[in-house]
Amino acid sequence: MKFNARICARTVFLPILILTISAATPVVAAIQQAEAAPLPARKPVIVEWVYRIQYGHKDEWWRIFKKYQIAILDRQKQLGYVKEYTIFAPSLHTSEDSRWDYRIVIVRASEDPPPGQSEADIARQLFPDQGTFAREENRRWELTTNHWDLPIHVVKADAAD
Image (cartoon, rainbow, N blue to C red; front, side):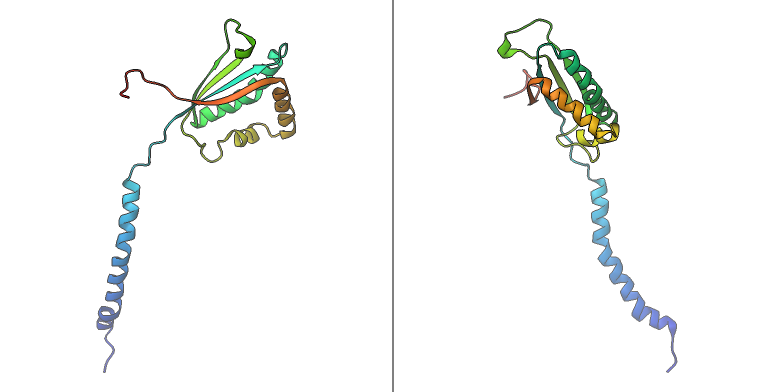
């Protein structure tokens, strides 16, 4: 009996080729479906930072806050994690129990930062001298008499209950 390459290819390789293609088809379909499916929309998050500073130290506190925290927020804004932020200071005085010195309202793209965009990640990128960063930030916290972070949301008065 003489070896026939054509017959061998049809009987051996063709069934293997068909089996391989049919096995790969669901995988290819799943990949195409995943590429076509839209990613879940990330819901913006609004947070308010509120600070009360020791009397007589507001300028020092602001200098440190601006040097580090504003620089971090600006970088996060450039990268897209922070959509916007607004800094508020009171125009008049209030009673001591309700006194605040700064409020910073931050709109973030989502609850969690993308990889490499957390405050700590950005601080390490912007301020390689982490010893000085830590010392000055600790000083800012020494000057802070009260602070809270408050997740907030917009209430639409005309929305259905």
